[in-house]
Structure formats: C-alpha cells, structure tokens
Length: 76
Image 1 (tube, rainbow, N blue to C red):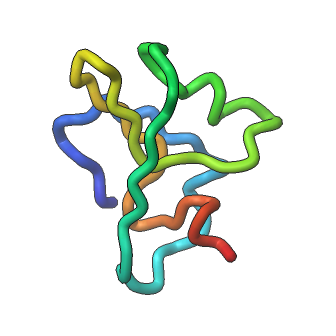
Image 2 (image 1 turned 90 degrees about the vertical axis):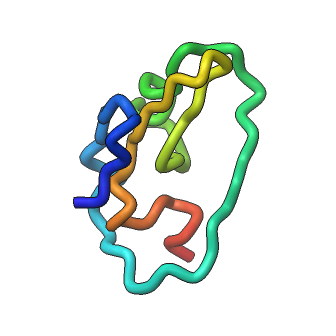
C-alpha cells in the first residue's frame, strides 16, 4: 500500500482496483469547492471519476485511492 501518512484514509473500494503499471506523470486539479470532504461525491454511484487526494482549505488531506492504483483519469 502507498498511503500518505498525513492524510485521513477514506479509501473507496471501487476506485482501488487497477494497479499502477508505472509512474510517469502527476495531474493536479483544483476542486471549486468549500466542502470539508469530497468523499460522499466520489463514493456515490454516479461519480465518473475520483482523485487520489483532496486537500481542504484548512489543509486537511483525505486520501481516496492508494497511490499503488490508478485513478479513473489514468485508465484510458
């Protein structure tokens, strides 16, 4: 497992399935949100993708996908 020790681990099973073959890039995204968490959105049945991490405005980090696995953005 590749978990960031500074994050609250809230792994979502459906996004932790396809193992990373190699690491060749990092995509940074900005969530236009003031939410404390995006767990409910990503864990819901309709979410088309998921991020490995979410960092709230107060600096709190959550990890949804183990970095040993790909996010939906990397499945193509």
